[in-house]
Length: 184
Image (cartoon, rainbow, N blue to C red; front, side):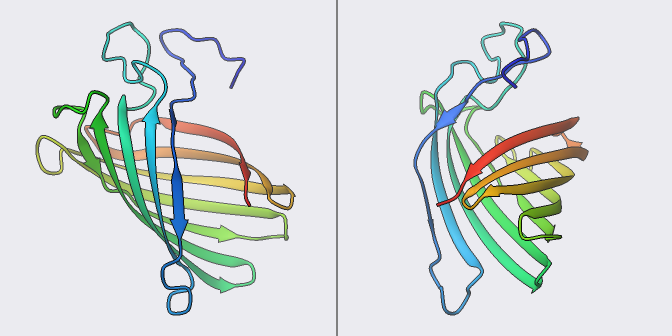
């Protein structure tokens, strides 16, 4: 990522930073259920090219409050289903109302396959409607495939490919993601 040059078609940046909290409110009754909430503050200017400088859209130029509901459903030792429902509240950087204030409500499902203790191969599907100036102003559907490798305990590397297979006023193209995760 750090070797890409920036031009009218490519752009890179760390976009947001903020606190996150995750809890399991019912550890005995719903063991696989958890809630996560994050407040993401933009740390780069003009993420959405609203200033018209010819750079591509990178992210929404907004503060974001994310609330996510997670549910893990183990099938057996090598297969697990994972479900997620989210509410993302985007608020314009200057806290005014307008086009930069809206809600997204993604619904996701993952099927995880564990061929070994260190490898995970997964597939996902997501439907994401957006509610803004008008109800159901846009939506997209994406599907993907990815894999994770646990390098050492608590440290994982991950790659993911997604394709936006359908959309209305949103979602086009594909993504290629590479990441590292530290789990404590």
